[in-house]
Length: 597
Image 1: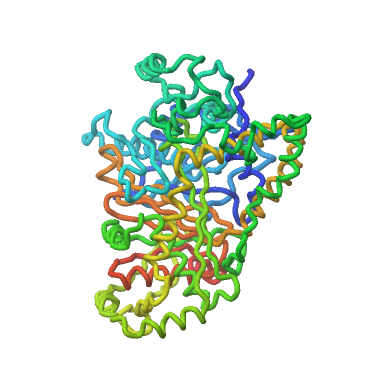
Image 2 (image 1 turned 60 degrees about the vertical axis):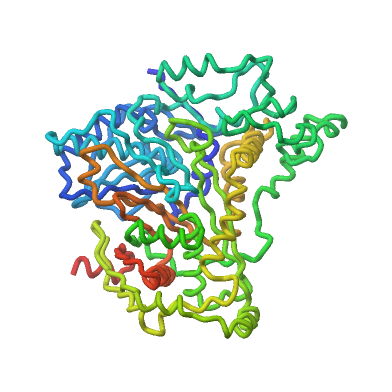
């Protein structure tokens, strides 16, 4: 029988080349119920959910020139959690599904190889799975069949950076194998080809009919390169007002050349242009202009991921972010920067901290495909040197510190618990009372306080996540990927090139931050899920953020044994009046020995 197959999307190829023993490119989303999970009911719910997601039937295959996803007749089985978190899933020599569903005590756990799906797509799957399970477990509490599903980003303050997408439509079989949102929105189109619309990702006949009626005629559309009059072209978000854009002949083309018209007048433009782009490939590596601090550490003995979960009231942390005038994701990034600075003691000459944050493209370019559809944005902050801080302290001696002292007096301590997993408990690492002078919030006499850093990061982030900026960047990558000279390069050599690009990107990163936003579930799942958690395998320290039912979960992952930066992060929160509960996974030989003792 001939099976359906499709090439990997633009974002997925890098995961194959960049995976390693310590970072197998696996992420986990879990729901913690208010009772011990029934494996039989969970298997029944998984069978029903699996049938609605053809994409999740796929296995990963290797061709001469590319990787591709191929449909399979494999069926997933629910298992207990017998492996460490985010253990490798993809194995090149085995034909296996690219996800696993597990349970442990009160947790329903979904782990996915990132080349298959992104966080939003995985959240859709888990939402349907948990909802199906809850309806089987509580048949007398059936909610409306039309109840809204998970809505990452439905609260703007919790998801301004990650962007959300309705998961209530996740039951549609439109989540198929073929829909590649990157190619659909950003590849070059012919003049007689209609631009992408939301109906292309929906099975709703009404939506398709409406879009067909509203779709402009081919003669009225500019091509995707934007060369005709830009005043008639809708912007990337589908808005009609683009009249204020400069004329297309004045804009740089996708390769960054200032005058596309003048460039076309040169001799043999096609081949010379393509070869030139390949020769300029090192420019894509994003080697840092500043010396970026990279967090050092001791690798875990068997390369397992160190995972630590912090749980806190969502309202309290949102109030802190609002008080500083900063969106939540950038506020947490600023806290993370400060925690690393405090744990390092001295940043030395590398005083710049840099963070990457994924942006869900579905908020700008509608798609119901659970395949990867995100872009990554980078922000950074350079700390002042000790001499600059000292001079700032001397000039600010007269500034009162009453506000900080009041916050230090009202600081609860963090609580340590054990997480739900076979190796998810840790010896007591108590976080001392922040009311003592040794743990008071430092006096901020420079531009390096958390609020100022957060506002600076947000000022960098905002312009990079407009539809226009994202579309320009993604079109460049799509055009580069489609060049004939690169398409004919054998896959193993492509992997080497992508690994080199990934190495260059990593040289300029200190941490990573990901926010799935606020999640609400249909009944009866909403009433029986206590909290939801999200974390990834990591090549560097990373935080993943998720909120449900008023509880915010901030999960730290790292390839290192040390947790000093996490301790400092928790102290910064408790010193500001936020009650924090901490749970961690055992990774060292000594910690694991305590489990078997």
